[in-house]
Image (cartoon, rainbow, N blue to C red):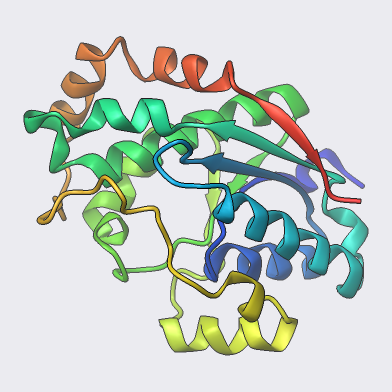
Length: 219
């Protein structure tokens, strides 16, 4: 398989990202799954659901072997807690996704990937407004693949049921455990960069997160 067919997939325990992975496997992409665990803010449920959904896709999809046999897990709860200060909190979800992109960039560099895959779609949560998606993408040096971008939630749910990941992914999502009541919907890049600079810079936040890296076998 050509090098340009390798992408880093940011996968969560939710409904969307397994559907995005399935779509890209069908298109012939090799998938390296990365999960950003929010422990100790949350428990291990999201990681367990992520591993189960990736195993299911490996065993049921044509070309399921294109999904890497190891789930890369990076614990970010201690970093996310830093994003709850008064001046930073309204941008919490955008900062979180920028952190995730920075982590994905590390693996893309390491593995020679050409793109970052996410299950993001348009407007379903505050971080997925057009303005915020642009600010999130700015944190990545790699092309972003968003195969669900134009779908509504019911279409994604229907597809998750069809591929058999819906029941695995069902249940409460905990990604908003530390989120603000009124998050920003249009990010200001200057403000975001200033917040990150005060915390040592996005690269340092990524490096601190990666110190927790571990591998979980999917076979």
